[in-house]
Image (cartoon, rainbow, N blue to C red; front, side, top):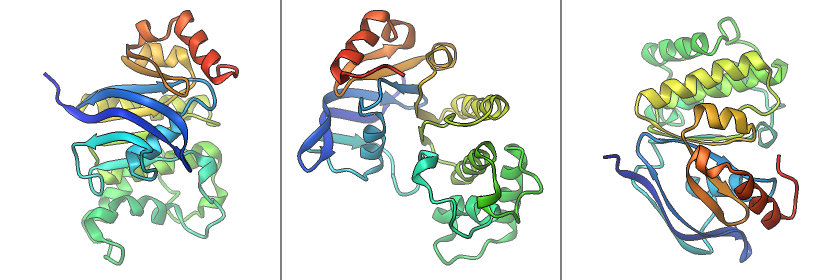
Length: 238
């Protein structure tokens, strides 16, 4: 039986005492593959930031049964990243090795090989010396996934990993997520494509500013539950 990697205990998160999500309880199990779904403003990204420790709970607690400094990897939304920063694809990917080499550590031959392999895995061979500002949206997302590969974390949080990328990139990155799942890693992803969720993600957490449903995706993503989430957020479901 899988053990709980994360436990949420009547959790409320937000800013300046204004809750974006309220009174959520549940468990993310080790090795699970989870989709966070809900309308815009439902609190999906807020929950990921809470798990990352970027937001302090207003009420309740997050029990994280890993070392979040070394065993947790996070993919933010592309819009949250300054792509004008003068850095190469190689250096971006190398940041994934930070826990092993430190802020000022040298990229040794072993790490260099890991970086080269990660670039190969995501289809970016020959891109190492290019500036990240020259990449397309799909290429940049591939580079961010290569950085995740370097982290070798057991818990991976993905905030809209397929937003604004082409179909080929989506297919390749989804295959990587499935590999992580097969390796026994825990993946929690904010997703909007419900057909993809139903096909590939066995467990869903539906939010609407609060918990609407948590369980098997087919049971969670019902017309009634989706309507309730829309009603709670007073917005359109995307």
